[in-house]
Amino acid sequence: MRQKTTLEGKTVPIKIIDISMPITNEMSVYKNKPDKKPLISIEQTIEHGAQETRLDMNLHTGTHFDGPNHMIKDAFSADQQLGTQFVFAAQVLDVSDALEAIDATVLETKTISPGKFILLKTTNSSDETFDPRFVYLEKTGAQKLVQAHVAGVGIDALGIERDQPEHETHRMLMQNNVRILEGLRLAHVPEGNYTLVVAPLSIPGSDATPVRAFLISEGD
Image 1 (cartoon, rainbow, N blue to C red):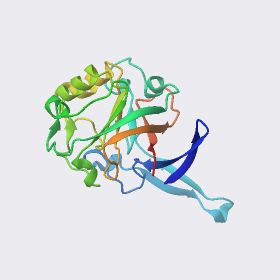
Image 2: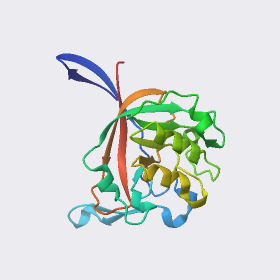
Image 3: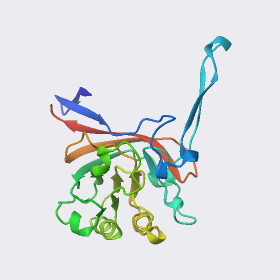
């Protein structure tokens, strides 16, 4: 979507890029578990005065933030970690050459900007189904991002790691207050710098929160 905004008295064209997963009854879910599928149903029809729809789903469905309390006892919840910060300077890194895992060696080929929210674009973005062999962020890659003092890490998979012992990637990021955003759609997004906007649901004490995420870039 192309729009215009005013910056310092000048009209600047901007492009808004949705990077969220649509929520549907048949959407891809982690490990293809039937109980993780969202259930969207018409609870009341318009013949009864007004149509009303009901949504039942796990908070780790689709595009979502993980709260540190997802993995760490008595840690911050998703809403506490995010606070009121929903806009971030972001950097999309195209790491599609990584066929198994994104480790420190893969990230050494990239210039990582401190303070930015890093979004990892992998071959996962080319597949709308759940692949149990999805590309994930390995613990040395997570450590490198922590050392780079990034604000957060997002990935185009429904998990940032894949059955790693002791959930090392999650814990490495969470213990260093690096936010985790999972379930992105980045196939249509070129590598580069953007503004990331995420609109989470306000669910106090939650270990995750679904979000609508989009990127803003300046220019045509």
